[in-house]
Structure formats: structure tokens, C-alpha cells
Amino acid sequence: MEKLLNDLYMAVIYQNRWQVYLEGLGNTLLITACALLIGILIGLVVALVRITCAPRNNFLQKLGSWLCGLYTTVIRGTPVIVQLLILYTVILASSEGIVVCIVGFGINSGAYLAEVARSGIASVDPGQMEAGRSLGLGYGVTMRRIVLPQAVKNILPALFNEFIALLKETSVAGYIAVRDLTKASDGIRGITFNSVPLYLAAIIYLVFVIGITQIQKQVERRLAQSDRG
Image (cartoon, rainbow, N blue to C red; front, side, top):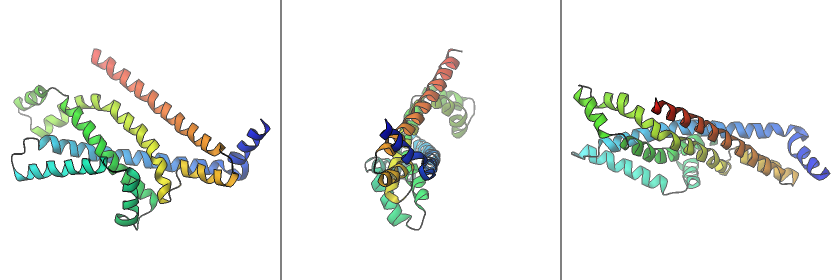
């Protein structure tokens, strides 16, 4: 017990090392939140392009559908750490590591959310689009005001799951010299020569995942109540 308390003291209290955890956690949350927003925007655009270009009546539609398909295939088919390293060493070589992480994780998340959004929109009864068009609404207005609000209910659970996955995936940010929670904890482990910092990092991740999961359950419960009227 005395050894455990001493390890905790050295890992957290000594020389205000708790501030390092806070800095790492802040970077982790910043990367996750910004990347998720980028991923949502990219995913929604890609999903709408693929749905709109589904008939493929002309060259532009074929090109748009092909480019979106290529994007999702390449991003989903390669490891995120490889994507980050390419961005960090080649494409965004002059940018800070945290910026590269936000862009890289955002692009990666967008490929997965594109399929989520596409399936969510496709799950809405096609009659909703036809009804809106029959009332004289344009395609864009009908999609924005009628189809997308209904699709959101189907997309939300998967969106929360992506949020959780993204939060954990950011643990590889240390590969490009970003001091996220994992990197900060491992740095302290290297100084103290004990594994307590890694256990603390695992607990912090677990607490956030549990919190997000509880929020997800509350949102789903409210949506279920609204469906029942």
C-alpha cells in the first residue's frame, strides 16, 4: 500500500505533474471535438453527393460519385496513423502537430460518417421526398427540411459511437509529437519508472467514454419518447 501511495504521489503530485495530464487531456478533447465537426461536415457532403449522383446521368454525376467512392475506400482502407504520418511529413509538413491531428482525424472520421449519413438518409421513406416535391419544394429544401431531420434520429447512435472511437483513436497523436493524454502519461511513466500514469490515463478515457455513453442513452430515450408522441 505504501508503495502504491508513493507511486501515485510521484505520478500526480510531485512537481505538479497533474498539470501535464490536464494539458494532455485538453489536447485530446480539442482534437476529438474539432475532428468530429470536420468529419460531420465531410461525411454529410459526401453522403449527399453520392445520393444525388446515384442516377449517374451525366459525366459530372459519375465523376462526383467516383471521387466520393475513392475517398471513402482509400481512407477506410488505410491505417489512421499512416495517414497522420503522411500529412505530418509531406502534405502539411509546415503545420503544427495538433493542426495535423485535427485535419487528419477529421478526414478519417468523415469517411466513416459518410457511410453512416448515407445509410441514415436512405432509411427515410422515399415517399417523404416525393411528398415534398409534390408540394412544390425544391430538392435541396425538401432534403434540408423534411428528409435530414428524420435521418438525424437514425444517425445519432452511430454518431455517438464515432465520437467514442475518435476519442480513443487520438491516443496515437504522440506519433507526430503531439502531447495528448496518452503521450503525457507515457512521458511521466518514463520519468517515474512505474506504470501508474498509464493506469490513470486508462481511467480518464474510461470515465469520458462512460459519460458519453450515458448522454447517448438519454438522447435516444428522448427521441423514443418524441416518436411515441
